[in-house]
Image 1: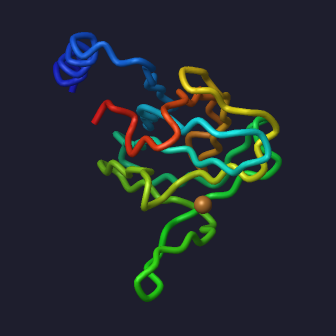
Image 2: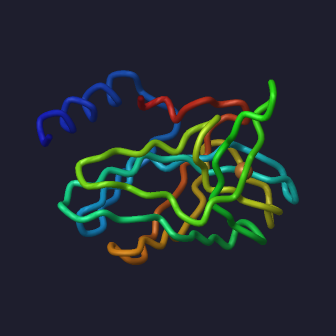
Length: 153
Ligand SMILES: [Cu+2]
């Protein structure tokens, strides 16, 4: 795993990405590349990341908060006929040995009512609360408004 991470870091350096999302750890959980999209004040936003459970116990993301939004919810996307709709979920489970991806079109942390603009290239603080790993502070790297990924995948 260490070798793989080193290779990823080297690849990121070569590509010279505009905004670099960081990785975080909390107990047995790795929170990788947390990111969001540029958006104006009072709009809604969404945060994405990968969650990897390297331990032997299940864990769950149970809530999140940020000063950047009035309300923060955990959402998934469900197919409703031929449209995709967002739906709140009570938690996002991360089983032992699993990696769960929060990404456009799937699970995301919904940022409702941004308290200010999120500018591309900036960083936005986000507190994640896990059932086992507890509270983790991360920073979202703000990518372009229409970005489909953090550019690290
Ligand atoms: Cu949503």
